[in-house]
Length: 272
Length: 279
Image (cartoon, rainbow over all chains, first blue to last red; front, top):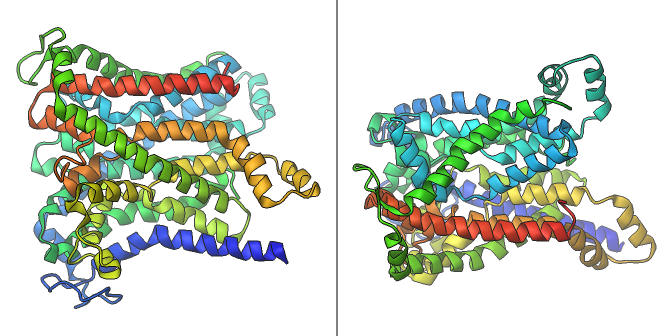
């Protein structure tokens, strides 16, 4: 009896938590459907006044969102595969290395995870300027070389270390090189992690704001996040247009995450 | 296994090029005057004495500490609470997990602009529902708002806490239940003590993340105001370097962030040793 009461309390708390976390996003969609140019609402509007989808079309009259989308897609198309490969290799190395090498690689990843990126803005900018890469997309893609964030390396390491070690030993007896073992044994088994990391890396690069802000100066090279910022100056009466643009920029990573969430929680983290 | 290290090479080289090298460069630049146009000019300790006398720097550091005190405990409680709530095997829990992570996937700019509207005193739904005034024109209103909106984006800490909670063997709880222990005992004597090392690590990481995550909301929502109340260190570095083109002095400020980070990593290493996580 008591435990069933506890269970329903838990269920209630979960629903409350989910509601709180999802409400801001629902508000974003609701707000994007209100006709622009209207006076402030009188109280909370569940159905927006002057309900319209036209804001989504009108965004393109304010900012060249198409150009920004193309640039973001170029960055993502290069950065995501590179991130997945680099993270998978490093994660595999951590999983099969000697205990000492494993500890060193994990310590290196954790320390790198600790360094605030904001402390690196200036010296990285100076380096890329020196390389003549300012106002190109390369500084935005470059983080893929370090697996975008060491968090993804640790996700791969976690998942590879759950594979039975006999699998790797058998491959080693067949005289496969480490790369061969990765290629023939580990990589084919890592589709769920690869998908999870790809989706997270996509979200990271898609949302990246500071790098385009620092490096891109020409208008036609901007990515979606900085392009979205241009709408910040809209009057509150035009906020529906701002929100419609926000929904469009938010939708791809959110949909990708929801589609891949089972790979992330169940297959990668082992949380059933 | 021999030569497996080679597979980690791209990652290690990437870290060296994008983290190691810039960190060393920052150390060098911190003692120069550098506009980005003319080459850096060594000025010795001039930047350091300037930093010590710079009230804007101390104010930004103070604001950052206020942010840490306001946001980190809330974020940690939210991440741990969500992890403990959603760790059971049930349909509600597995539906709740992706939803708890969802705000973390929202691009920072879209998220900040969403709050610009949510908090708008005339058009925003929060004003319509709760009758809130314009929080962002009041220094503490702005500080608390920026801390609160960060509480929704706790995905990484949440999944790490979730994975660690899952790694606690269930038989410990069964044994406690056989001895007649209630849920409170299980939480305070089993779950929390066993999770303490990782919670400590997550908290330290979150403190460091506070030197970075508040840039976008402070940049877009409040522009560091009102009255500099939300000018945090990242925003101050950004302005110094990319609005006033003092790249040398900005590196000196960044150096203080490295020092804070180094102290925290050291503390963490000592704690990890005490908890026998590393040799």
